[in-house]
Picture (cartoon, rainbow, N blue to C red):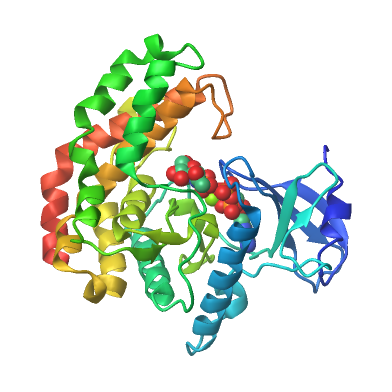
Length: 364
Ligand code: ADP
Ligand code: GN1
Ligand code: MG
């Protein structure tokens, strides 16, 4: 192992002693380890090496998460029957009073209590889970609506600004840093053809038709932890909780939670959005948040999964063209494979868009 995980772990104020570490989870950004402690009655922990290429300002990132987790704990502990330790992330502090540790090589580390016996889903297998996931995200947004104090830091500037993503992509095409642009003309055309219509959420925001909210911004379905009975427990991966539009959270959860195949499925014939999963997620989500949404937010909710799937297609292709600098990849053309899978999903959503609109209209 490259890092002295025991030594790093020991710089945090922890109950329990280090027994062993194993790589954990399927996230694309950080290096995540599960730390087992020796004592059976003590918690286990998640130790993460924070990706500081993606997140450039670690103190601001950590300050956001400290504020958000504290607020959520306060609110959840006031809900009768809740179990704060399983429903809220808890970040541990270091002996020097910070919530992160810097090692000798300049890497940044943090620790959370491991939420044991959870389930998480890269692919959702039932409308019941989709409904629960929708409720969990709706509730998360509702709980954060009254976060006190100054606005959260923008941990990744313009994260879901599709207009900026498109101009960045056009620039990547021009500079072609990895010499791959000639390989991807079909995928590039697919993106450029749709570019104008996908700027809609940004435009509505600029025209003050939809408000800026506090949103999660990375509602990939596997960032919702469930218990063994299929009930949602806790939303994790809080790095991008910051000002944003509700549409990003709704859209990304559908992109990942209503696709019957994996995000990077190689066999494109297997990819489609299951309309029942879409409907169930929307129902759960709107049950929690419907009264908060304004009419324009409601009107454009059905289009949000298309925008987010478009954005993700563009992001994967952009990373391929840049020579795979952002996402962890597991083989040489992984980002291209992911691009094609997301294109297929988007085409399928386009075919079902009328039905998606009908479902949302009925629910709101
Ligand atoms: P990434 O940004 O790389 O996706 P995450 O914060 O989502 O990083 O963590 C990666 C994985 O680690 C998650 O998908 C989940 O499986 C697991 N994980 C993270 N935090 C916890 C936690 N507190 N309890 C249990 N599992 C966790
Ligand atoms: C990353 O961190 P993770 O794996 O949950 C990414 C998301 C992408 C997703 C695609 C900070 O999510 O924005 O939608 O990969 N997170 C960041 O799988 O860029
Ligand atoms: Mg994650």
